[in-house]
Amino acid sequence: MVTILVGGQWGDEGKGKIIDLLSEKADMVIRSQGGNNAGHTVVNAGQEFRFHLIPSGILYPTTTCVIGNGVVLDPRVLLEEMQQVQSRGISIDRLVISDRAHLIMPWHPILDKLEEEQRGDDRLGTTWRGIGPAYADKIRRIGFRAGDLLKPRFLEKKLTFVLGKIKNPILEELYHVAPLDRQAILNEYTEYGERLRPYIKDIFPIVQDALARDGRVLLEGAQGSMLDLDFGTYPYVTSSSPTAGGALTGSGIPPSAVDLTIGVFKAYTTRVGYGPMPTELADTLGEQIRKIGAEYGTTTGRPRRVGWFDAVVARYSVALNGIRSIALTKLDVLDGFDPIRICTGYLSKGVLQTYPMSNISHLKHCEPVYEELPGWGASIACIRRPDAGRPRRVNDASGRTPGQPPLDTRAGRRRSAATWSCDSGTHFSRSTKARGD
Ligand code: IMO
Ligand code: MG
Image (cartoon, rainbow, N blue to C red; front, side):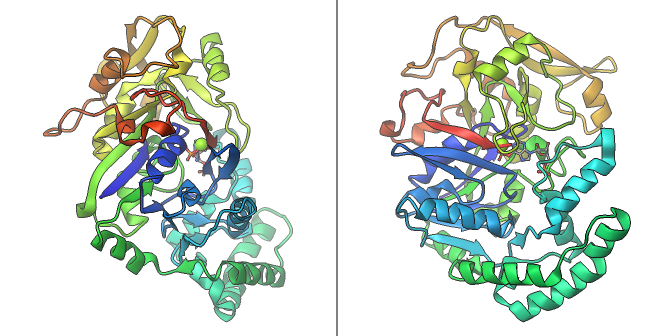
C-alpha cells in the first residue's frame, strides 16, 4: 500500500500532524523532496521534537525512515536532528539516506541570500537555506551527492573544480565577497561523511523490497502544490516538485504502485514569502486569523500571509495530484468568525476562471468570487463526528477529477482513535503543530 501525502496550498497546511498520525501505521516513510526549508514540530509522549529533514516516523520503533534521492540535504542540519533524537534515547538505526540525495554545500545559503538581495523589490522571499541554488546545481550537473561524502578523493577533486572554477569566482567577482576555503570544506564534509556513513545507502533495493512485500509505504511531501516549480506561482515557488509526481521521482516509486494520494488543506489559506495570493486578507480580519492560528513561519519567524479558503486552488491541487482524500486542518481557528467565505472562482479581465491562471500577473490582479457561509459561533474543539456542513462544502467546492469517487474529507479515519485528543474526522487537534516556513 503506497500513500502519497501532499500539501494542497502554499505549504504549512499542517502536513506534519497528518504524517505523524499515518507514520504510526507505516512500515516505511520516505521524504521525497525539499530540504530544511520545511519541517514540523511533533510532541510525542510529552517531548517536543523539531524535524526539518528526518521523517517524524523515526519516533515509531518499527518504521524505516528514508531520506529520498529528491531531497536536498544539509548535512549539518541532519546531524543536529539525529543528535536531537538520539539524545532522547530514541534509536536512529532505521534511518536511511539515499546516496543520490544532493547536498547543500556552504556556498548555497550564501548564494541564496546574495541572489535575493540582487533581486531587490522582486525578491522571492526564500528561506535562505540554499534550496534553490542546490537544486540549480543538481540540474547543472555540478551538484554534490550524499554518496560523494564517502569518497574523500572524489570529493576533493570535485571541490577543486566546482569551488575553484565556478563558485569562488562568482562569490569574488560577481558579488565581491570573500571566497570559501576548499580545505576547510573538505575537512568538514569528510567528517560529515564519516558520521553519516552507516546511513548512506542506495535506497533502490530497499524501496523495491518494501514494495515487493506489499509494505505500507508513506511518501511524505513537504511544501505545497502552489509552490511547485512547474505548476505553482512561478517564480514565487520553491525549487522542487511538491506534487504527487515529485514524490515519485524523488523516491523511485513507480506511478502504478500508488494506492492513494491524500491532500492536506488548511481551512483558510496562508502563504510565506512573496507572490500572488488571490484571497489574501490584508486587514484586521487577516490579522485576527493570523493571531488565533499562530501563523508565523517558525523557521524564519516571518508572519504568514492569511486569507480565506481558496477552492480554486483546492480544485487545482485535487486534479493535479489525483487527490482522493482531504485532511482539513485548523478548522477550529475559524470558530466565531461569521460569515465564513470560500473563494469559488476568480474574475479576471471580465472572465470567470475556475483554475489558477499560469500568468501570475493575471492571478495577482484577479478578483476572487466568494461564497458566504454562516459561521458556527461556538468552539468545535470537541466535535465527535464529522459535521455535514462546512467540510462538505469544502469537499464539493474542491471538485474531483472525472471518473473519481467523491473526495473523502475524513482522511483521519485511518487513525487510531487513541491518537486523537478530539475524535472528529474533519478537525485535527493533536498536539503537533506545523513548523518550517
Ligand atoms: P512546509 O513543508 C511554507 C516558501 C518560502 C518562499 C518560497 C521559496 O513547512 O510546508 P525556498 O527557500 O524553498 O527557495 O523558498 O517557498 N516555502 C515554504 N512556505 N512552507 C514550507 O514548507 C515552505 N518551504 C518553502 O517561504 O516563499
Ligand atoms: Mg512550513
